[in-house]
Image (cartoon, rainbow, N blue to C red; front, side, top):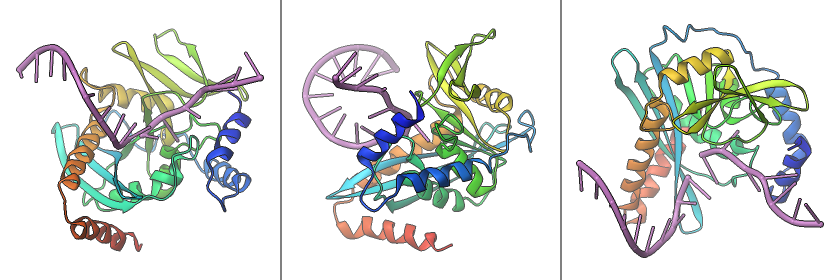
Length: 255
DNA sequence: GCGACAG
DNA sequence: ATCTTGTCGC
């Protein structure tokens, strides 16, 4: 698909009051801040953060449950985790995911007490028509190394590689914007978020993949934490209790 | 001509 | 992503 097709999709779902041309300019500007360089050695990195979100509906409002975990590769276990409840108003629109999920993710990340060396995000990074998938957006905001890991392709054409994986190619610019890593009979789509190279990103993700899941360990644990929090939220009959969780989340937002 | 669509 | 019924394996 061409970039213009994604604009057509976005325009169809964009809420009143948003200017798509302006949003695209901001995305392009932020994408220009992405650096594809290694500032950490992924073969020696130990503390890896995983981020994910789940949603729960309460009447007409949608509540996002964002979870962050820090996984220690050397210890083989989680060393930190955090969770935040917040109201999400922006809808899901392909290519504009960060408008919906970035703020909850940043809030969960900032609640961690251990600072990770690198962050894995559920979604694409540079493998995006404007080079600003949520992993890149987060990486620019946090000024941290980030990697996008997705279960399906958003943008780009797949080109086979000698090693059995596939490159994600932007045919409009001839740039390689990510890699589809073979895993079981499926693929996991890896792209640079920020401050890492594609080869390093792929190497780290491969090291963190288990046979039982399509996603690398830190994101898998973040996903499980989201789901257990969601079950906890579903048990709350009284509205005042879940409201307190939302208030706690909002108080943390003032930064 | 229609559909294409991370989470 | 969420919703939802039914089936399978621990």
